[in-house]
Amino acid sequence: MTYDLFVVGGGPAGYVAAIRASQLGMKVGIAEDRFLGGTCTNVGCIPTKAWLASSELFDEIKRSQKFGISVENPGIDIKKVASRTNRIVLRNRKGIEFLLKKNSVDFFNGHAEVKSTNRVKIGDKEVESKYLLLSQGSHPIKFPPFDVDGVLTSDEIFSINEIPRKLLIVGGGVIGVEMATFFSSFNCQVTIVEIMDHILPAMDEDVVEVVSNSLKKRGIQLHVKTKTLSVEKKHDKYLVTFEGEEKFEDEFDKILLSVGRKSNVFDDVKSLGIELDKRGNVITDLSMRTNIENIYAAGDINGKYMLAHVASREGIVAVSNMNGKKVEIDYRAVPSVVFSKPEIAMVGKGEDELKKKGIEYKKGVFPMSALGRARTLESNEGFAKILSDKNGVILGFTAVGPMTTEILMEGVLAVQNGFTLEKLVEHIHPHPTISEIVMQSAEDALGMPIDK
Image (cartoon, rainbow, N blue to C red):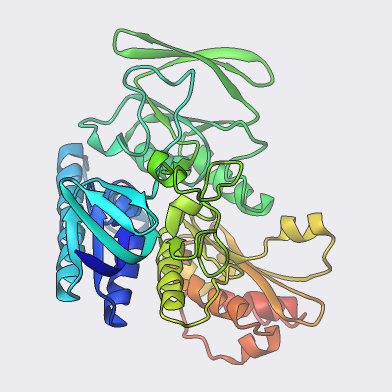
């Protein structure tokens, strides 16, 4: 069987690329050895947000008296939470399978071994293709002392059938903070251990301060600049020894290891002579082409952002170039979101990065507590911050607070298109909404705030 494009991996990069290639007139095949949708659909974005939707609703019920509503003795059934999550995941998988079929993409459910630059073997079938797209995704990093039976990663956490009494989360990045937010809603004593100077190492310190304070209010213990020395399983418990400012130990019912992911680059890809970086990721140019002319790579396998929305865009860029369009990926305005409590939304340059590089900038900040919509929601934690160069061209936007993940796209458009502060404030923002905070922070950067 011969194809114009064969895609190895059915995650956000792979299935999106396959569909777009077919829409552009290519004959396309795709192989996935596990489940369509990859990490995001099955053990990442979708199940995490389904779980967080349950905990957020539970939190709202607990504080309902502020809104004049009385609810007695709310409870949680983790098995029902898991059942609902599984239905959502299955529906997404089936949806992707339907879309592939609708767009005439041949789907092979099996392990694909790349045999040469234009041949792939799936089980007892072998196919040829003019182009190959590598999109095999990634897997959670696991290393000593966490190679102990029962230690969970983000791939296994959704299989638990009860809320632990005490949970250790190793790694204070996005996954760690989101999982801490979920479990702390249900009388689980959560401890986060982070080896870096603060949790969410990629975020500005003022953002981290707000979220850290919120996590502490939820009863979560935070230990930064702390290393795990040993993990010992005793019956159904884990005795863990740490070293921070001093050496200490504690006992936990469960451990979640969330210290990042590593790209799935296996021997078949290495044998092709594909160039890899020092971390073992496939190297691509901005067209998503590897050093082999007819082979492209997109998504986690290139190790650049490991975000589903970036993977999908990379897949489309790759296919566009296969079809003769000279398109390059633009990473300047990659949005990042964290579904913590409060939420974090960020795009473009951060303030700490600008300071470190010695770049001159203007800053506008507006507190969530001064926003009418936030007051009606009784959600006053957080702020919005907009950064521009000395000429007023917007370099970055960050917001911490309720629903900030839903308003981030305005910041993405501003950074992507080089909007100025003046241009942004010309747009009439609906009142009362959280989106007003974008305008308010821009007005502050111009030195003309109305409500501050």
